[in-house]
Image 1 (cartoon, rainbow, N blue to C red):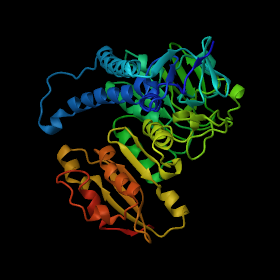
Image 2: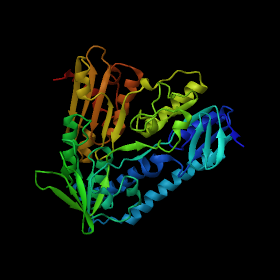
Image 3: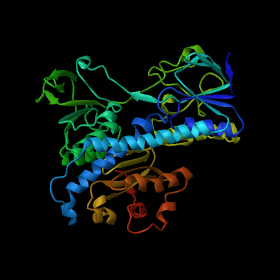
Image 4: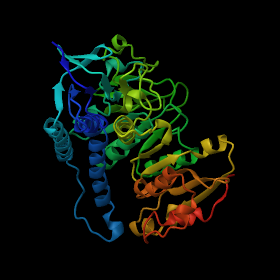
Length: 459
């Protein structure tokens, strides 16, 4: 006999738990289904563990460069990868445990463990257990993509998920994919002590960014000894002794790169293929994403898709915003929309790249009169004090409305400084809201009003 609920949430990633608890607090009987580990990608093999590893890698980098700050470190700096992994595992376990305890202790919330599949628009089976509800929220996340590379079935390889289980130091890590995930792993393992080569098929790294940004990021990585091979065509892999050879070129030498370990970092795909969506009549696109309207509703009344599965933002913060939109509209009588938000994200290399809104290329294509303010990080007091002056800050402004169109901050603490720009953009306020503000000295953010006072027409 089916168990009747008011709502079913499938998946405990970023959007799922707060939505389940919020619905339950409003008096609805809620079931939340998790087939594996509580917390989804971010907590288990995404944001939390990778940034924990980044922190360990930075500690090693600081120790090796201590002499530049007048600090003497006696002996070689050695990284204990087992301890690095143990620290990461402990932080992950605490996070997943907190989420599970929160859900199991929430009134009106029933936790169901197992693999959920639709049987009908209002019915879900979980390993033989039948659940029904008039509203179902799909929050199943995504997983690393494995591209059809010739020879891949014959070699061992890692993905961002598999890297979470590595407790030894690769001698030579070859990273296929020169975008956000790949570059974070490349830098952290170089700082741990591996030789690292990044292989990218596109003409430049992080190709969605402006060329100036891509070039600057590549230079930062190459200064740390990371080898970069862009424009890698004829990609194929093969065994070479105990390692793997990556063919990167048909004509130009060297044609192959031989490493001890291979990491595939070429994007992600949604976990929608085994949900039985067809039995509920829920549409998916060619890549498996679930199309949604401006309020996260699918083509089937009562079924919503949140987080990575809807293809409208592959970030933890966009997933959480999906929850906020749905909860506000269903419970608060609000009318929040996906179209109200604009792109905001960061690449957590060191220094980080923080982005909001339009790129230079997009601003030019918009046909607006665009103003730009720019400042190199070597002119920022906080960066000089810390001895980390790589990068630049750039903000784009609409010459007519005076509103900020976008920003790219590449430099120390950029991932925090960007938020004063995001807040003003979200408020729809003119750039003068920052320009006339008094910021604290000495910080990175204090220079944003200064560069906004030096706006020039975009060339």
